[in-house]
Image (cartoon, rainbow, N blue to C red):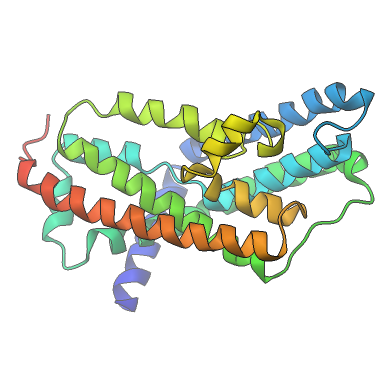
Length: 263
């Protein structure tokens, strides 16, 4: 298994480096909001703190969110859907490697490539906002690292399960586009969850999106700690299990529909 994993990682690191221009585009889509949103909140918070967040707190939140999103969030459903539609999915079915093992290895390779591309952009943004967060600190205890790993697994397993919809229909892209609307609002990527109305916060803790980037970011900035953080990590584990079961069910039923003829 380790030889298979290392082999897949080497192949897809080479693939990611070969198509690094597209990787830069993906990174820039994440960087754009991290650059603009702190400017919006710096202007909005001149009259005083908003829901307990000062202007420097909000800038720190978005910087931490940007860094963690690079490691946590996955968007593999587009590639999986393309491979299913074009018939390339057939190769995955006959390989002596489980499909989830393949996805996790492929994803780890992309994390390496993405981090190399992302680091210069992040350092430039950090330098730009350094004065706004002067004197602020972040929490780097074990809860943060555990929540980052768990949040990443929630994201990768959930989007892989979502991608299995493409086994049942040739037009899954519209469903994937709908995924981003609740994801952006309920994961804390557009606004900190504390700034949203009570009914939206209630939705956030029910769906898996908050347990991808929202929980690790709030732990890092010190908004979530102690028993509350442990409870959130427990729910992350539950969502990993639920997403994996959903993936297994959709994969088993979907491969019976899959024809593998391509377009």
